[in-house]
Length: 317
Ligand code: SAM
Image (cartoon, rainbow, N blue to C red; front, side):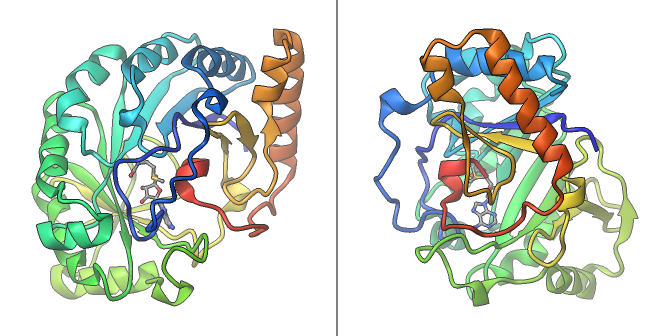
């Protein structure tokens, strides 16, 4: 397994308040001066590229709320060795920014869309942005950010009713509708008992649309398994991070918005890259640390252990 994928959280701020992520909207944000600057992120990404990273995804918090994020996209797209640059967004600002993101070199986009209905969307996210996100998805398709993937986290008693309508979006649109199993991360989010296994999501879809057939993803090779409803324009992805175990094939590292490198989403420990850089370390010293982190990641197949509570918007989901 080669470690070639880096997720960069560009901010811990977000313009939504999703019940599965940060329902209380903790205002305990990282102080601005502790966030990595875009120049620092660009330097770190360039050094990661020298260590074999070929794919970068920007995430957060909500990456599109950080001022000048398009500038960062342009810089990262220009790094030699970076073949794939993608973004995970809640889509609220996507309609306004899709054109310039594409122009800056963004290849593809994942949009969180946990509901196919306005009122229910508001219940999940706390905000009335259903139409903005819908227009954002159409805009992403129009400017050929390809592929467009939609991410839905299904929570018992909240949006299970939306599964058929979300699945139907893959029939009508050339998108991958991905169901991500809810992973309880803290006492503030929903209880673990609200988790819906993807076996149940699949059962609900097949009850309505008939048997799904396996298919291969158009791009990216993360942990999702892909299926098709017959004659659909798009496909369905199942990301079963709770009911299945894919540490052995995990090839991703995470850079948090305050400059820590986490070998795993659930790591309790993050390597303090920002501290090293702000202490004036030269490229060689930074490269040495990155190589060590990558070697550790390659050697370990059992990182997936909860060691403390965390919030996805802090780490970068
Ligand atoms: N703001 C962007 C967005 O909404 O997509 C990017 C950040 S968000 C933390 C990234 C992904 O994490 C989203 O696809 C979201 O569905 C997922 N996520 C957040 N909390 C989660 C949880 N508790 N369980 C499973 N997935 C979660």
